[in-house]
Each structure stands twice: as C-alpha cells, then as structure tokens.
Image (tube, rainbow, N blue to C red; front, side, top):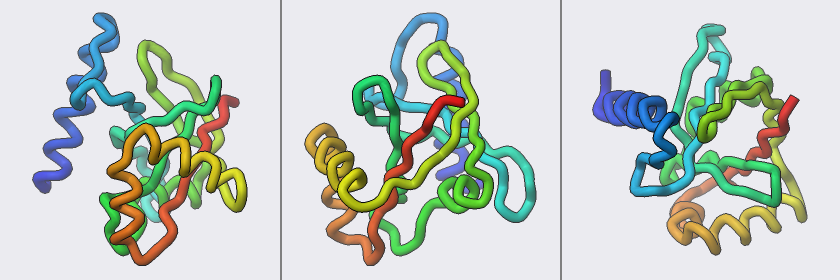
Length: 137
C-alpha cells in the first residue's frame, strides 16, 4: 500500500468507528465514504471524500489537490455512476451526476467560500475540477 492508501484506510476506519458516537474525523470537516465500481476492474473501492451541502443535497469535488489528472474515484463514477454513500450514521445508494455550466459555478462558489483551499487547487490545476452531485436513489 502507498502512503496515501494507508492514510485513506485509517480515515475510513476512524469514520466507521465514529458513526455511533457522532464524532467527525479529519479535523472535524464533513466527509463521506464514497464507494465506486472500478472503471476497468469492476471491483468496489471506498474513498473518503470531503462533502459539501446544497440545502438537503450533497456534492463532492474531484480535486486531487490540484493535480493535472482527476482522481481514480472520479474516473470510476463516470464509468459507473451508481455509487454508495456513507455519511454520518446513514448509508444509501446514489446516482453521481457531474455538474456543468451555471450549476457548477454556483456550487463552486459555495464550496470555495466554505473551504478556500479548493480555489487554490483550481488555481494550480490545468483542468477544470469536477463537482459531482450525489443524488439519492
């Protein structure tokens, strides 16, 4: 396992262990565990992802810290948009919908107001960072 995989596995374990207590791992920032189906392998992969709220809807950002490529989980959900979301004490199935145009811009403004680091990621990225709504099924 890489350092990133080890770190993510630790966050996943802490997240799941804290579900009964209501504690929030990762410096008290809102997270979801997003389980996607591998684009090539068909295997399930779970990744902790920072989550944002738009009323009662939730969305995530495929920033990868401003890297030139999208994260693997994004590639997976584009290929297989049916995902599993774990948030708080709840687990549900969702349809991942990549936002575009005015919707994306509105959500981007909202997210970067909440978490300014994402604006920094976009500034160093050579791609437009995708925003993905996770719509309950």
